[in-house]
Length: 91
Image (cartoon, rainbow, N blue to C red; front, side):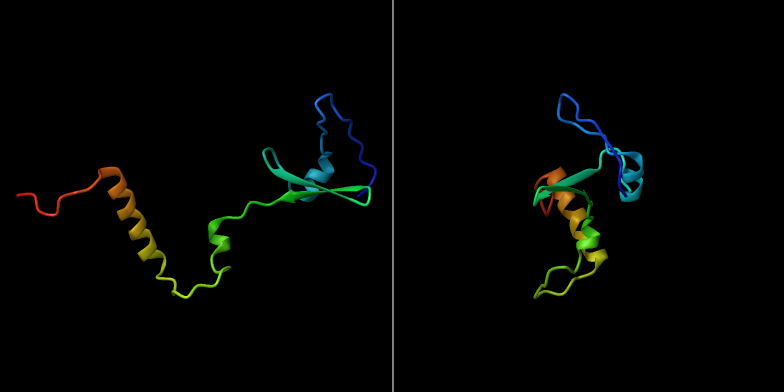
């Protein structure tokens, strides 16, 4: 895609032409990376990665206990943080 022109504002901002935003699937609030090499600038989207997408990308010596176990541990942790220490026996 060639021939798209944008003007630099006083603040150094440019508008990415609509055809390029559409081709790159960019929308309001998305981030982009500008690379400069050999006198040329390239722009590429900075894609958001969710934690779920990252699961399994690192090796571990401990097997994954399962989503249910992790969820229960998270709930217990949040409850402890919210309530503080709780006595075992309230006589």
